[in-house]
Image 1 (tube, rainbow, N blue to C red):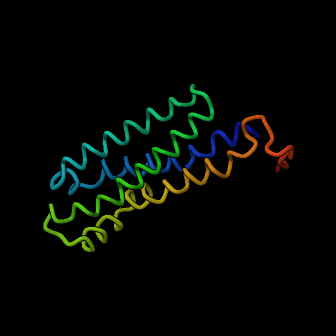
Image 2 (spheres, rainbow, N blue to C red):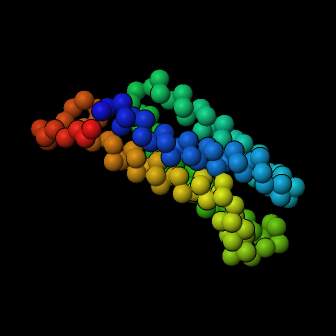
Length: 139
């Protein structure tokens, strides 16, 4: 089952990319009011696509990089609320706006799931069993 444990973090990662792409394609206010944020989201999404290329890299490095990137993205997405004054909104109003966008919600929620998938599937998936115990395989 090493293959499924390697792919598991990419499921929420892909959901995040889908949410980000949805935002870029459907949020007209993003482009009209905050083009800098839109270009930032394009950069984040481009890096996400590059993350798929990590599958040619050593397994442990890939997992660490995906975890770190998910945490950075979570910080960026949640930190976006702090830019509310740029748009003449309170932090609460801007948070309500952002969390009203399905793509934003998916992108934010996906990040902890990427980290969880890496952590939960990381035990014993390198081919070496931890503490001499083998984990059962479910079918």
